[in-house]
Amino acid sequence: MFGKVFRTLKQDGIFLFNIEHPVFTSGVGQDWIYGDDRQPKYWPVDDYYRPGKRETHFLGCDVVKYHHTLTQILMGLMRSGFILEVVEEAEPPRQMMDIPGMEHELRRPMMLLVRARAEK
Image 1 (cartoon, rainbow, N blue to C red):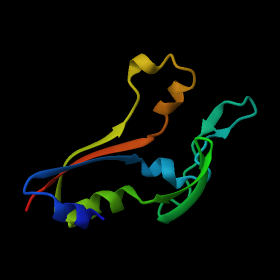
Image 2 (image 1 turned 90 degrees about the vertical axis):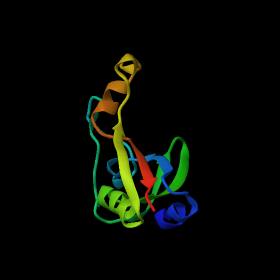
Image 3 (image 1 turned 45 degrees about the horizontal axis):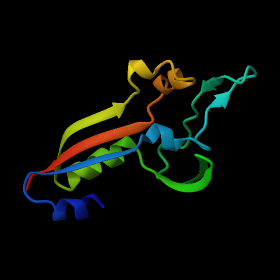
């Protein structure tokens, strides 16, 4: 896919994308493991190095997602000819910490933002 995007861009064209972080997609069920007190104990990471299809329940729907490691994503870009300019594991801003449950979003990355340039 990265090669196809690269071929469509002009010299120094920018490929900017936001995906679910591989830590987020690697777990089964994509939900916290809860303690007896019904508070999130930890985020399960399982089969991280096994890429591929993941069936889960997300935002009220059964969905199929595809997991890839961080290495596969970033090296895939570079092998396709892209120059990585920005890689950011997005975290919520401090002013959102008063939203119920938001403090748990600082415990694991959910989103990965990438800016890559097509150097031809």
